[in-house]
Length: 266
Length: 80
Image (cartoon, rainbow over all chains, first blue to last red; front, side, top):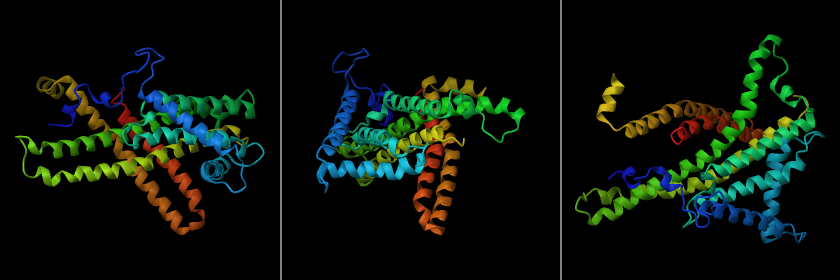
């Protein structure tokens, strides 16, 4: 029996969940929505509780919140956006921290026991997040570079004048259409691929281990049965890494786009 | 002619699945080479100048993200 035979309705069986409330309407509440809500609540709780007491020597949640905020500020916001007067690296740190932890807590569900499904594996959530980034970097561009921002961004200096006919559409598409698309697809496809890999190895080990009583059982199945299980453990650890890395990359790219819009010498 | 022969022997859906797998394989070649070169050069840079390791690492992850996106688009095309 092949793995594909376990999914008669295709791979979407792994990703589509039945709505618990208001099924088949736009207000449907399903597993993904609940996970996104719980992630939001966790983020809000950590940063609300972490910033309430303001103890001089932070402990517990405050420690975590301060460590997270400082890491994002010192590793992403200030080096990427820049600390010069028009860069405002530090003033973007709260937004970037929120983005990072929201994505991280939605990704990390992919390895949480009994849940095992990243909320970002449904394209709506990465799409919304990258649309927010898109709106923000365009707004920042208009704010810092004046109403001609689109032309300034699409006509890089140092290009011979006749080539602008070619450069303008290319830059327009690559900056304002491909960017949000690739930002969406990067997060979405990484989480989908990870989830599919985990599911495939889990099913493989399940098939090999439980088919011992089967009539079609062959002797070497028991020997190779632990191999996909070891791979499953490895993939789960790898997914933990991917969850952090994708949140980091999404945040860094957001910072890069904002920094590029905010800088004048472009 | 080959495609007609393939259509005769296989189900259309199966053929589409197989082709999308081949497409993903082709889409993964370029980014694979790209990421390999990128990480190799970054490791070299970090070894030569350890004090710049943090900045090199950030740029490396950005480059990986850009190169990886191409492979991932090839992966997502199956679902579209």
